[in-house]
Image (cartoon, rainbow, N blue to C red):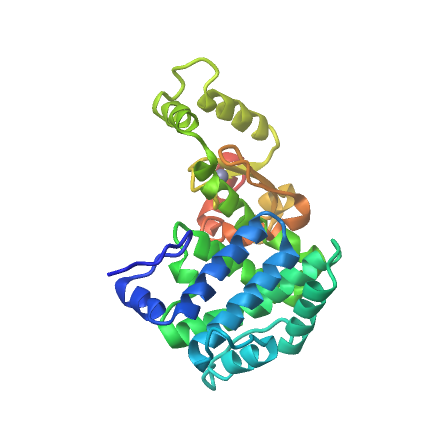
Length: 306
Ligand SMILES: [Zn+2]
């Protein structure tokens, strides 16, 4: 069977067939990937216009429009919205009309840095929900499930943060740091030459045995970070390195808290993922599975608190 070329998406045979049967559907999924790449590079307005192009392709794949027919975002969003079964909850942070107006402003007039947070909110909070509803209903594809290597889960958690109005004051750009860092970290190999890759892999293989190896460098970084007390070292939610993501925790919550660890900031010594104090909620979200009451109990024991 002919197969489609994706960057982050993995489809089973049935899903592949379903997408390949309708060329605009393939374009829709690939534009969604391009949206992710532009997001990683910080081009949030262009990312939004690319995601709306994905919606137009998705609508074309079901409307029967031909290659010569012009796309119309208002019609496309209405077509896709009508697919959502009644009783099926889809969250939109903004109305579909606002999505269209913003896309038109950006396409026909331009953008400034002020548009970044709004573009992110409309993309992640609204356009993505509509896109996912189409993929699920028409192709049995959950966009969060078909993104490989952990990206789907990070994206889904980031969407959850953006769809919670309580987080808007934090700035949408801050809430998608994990998504951006994951993409940059996991695509960097494509930009390295063969010798750079072999130096990297020999560094992994000769842990600590060569002079000034990456391992030694990371060990020193780990030591430095651990001086910020109290802290807890977790598996990095981005690169999955164990004992690598050092999270400073609030002293008050550790010693007198009500059973929850409050992160203050975090840094990964392996992939350099950094979460500043202003976006600490991101750590609680991305490391939710690790920040357990059992971990709190262990840390308290280590610090001699009962
Ligand atoms: Zn990492």
